[in-house]
Length: 309
Ligand code: SIN
Image 1 (tube, helix red, strand yellow):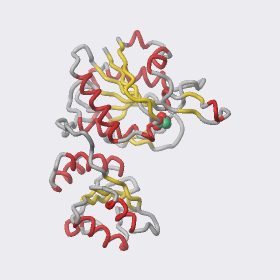
Image 2 (cartoon, protein in one colour):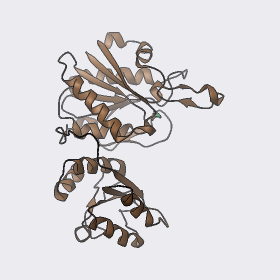
Image 3 (cartoon, rainbow, N blue to C red):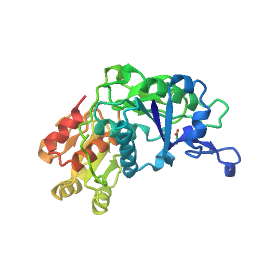
Image 4 (tube, rainbow, N blue to C red):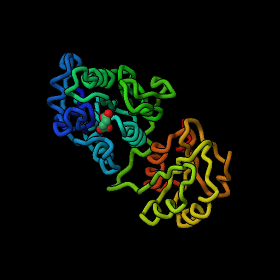
């Protein structure tokens, strides 16, 4: 049996009657109605389903990730369930997928999917994506690969997947083939009521250093710097970053470009006590740092986590 956990998203979206047809609202169609619109689903697998959230994924929070994790853990205890499919908005799908990838050990396959067109679109992509996700979650190939994602006929692994385009059915891409992926789950023992706050600070021409202090004063325990180029720290940020570090805030250099941010290249990471993101984009480096802080990882353990392929 495949268990579906619905969280909302465009896959459950419908035209917003207040917009005169120009906009839709994500996360309104209930999971039962979504399943009824998928031809061939009953032949593909026996299905059970649960509506655990009904969100536009731009509004998803770390507290919601914990709700999803708890639902997956519960489903994995049921021996009748062979695979789990999570229906999710595409905007932050890669974040939830990576959070689950780090918190779920190898076991019952978990596959996320969504849609770029709402459920009431004449050529909605949700039904085909849902069917493909159910098939992947039922397959032997999905086992041991960690959390997977299916969109537009292609599978991806949670670590490498990004939403690369704002629109179009081919919005997602990943740098590595999903078939080479391995389960991670190093935070499988995570048992927290909330996750520590980590903020992302964008680097851009003239970015004010006062943003650093604003985040720290407001409770951030970590800062991911989404910097230009090879993670280049503006000189005007150095005093604020040193002050934050001295207050125990973890500082992590990442880049707004694709490609690695390498330790001690382009900055004195050892001297400043900074972490580097490797090839993780800022939103995923943030998740790794949140989990590392929640689990009281040392700086060396956190750095090793960030640089893991
Ligand atoms: C959302 O992320 O919930 C809305 C956008 C989408 O699913 O494509």
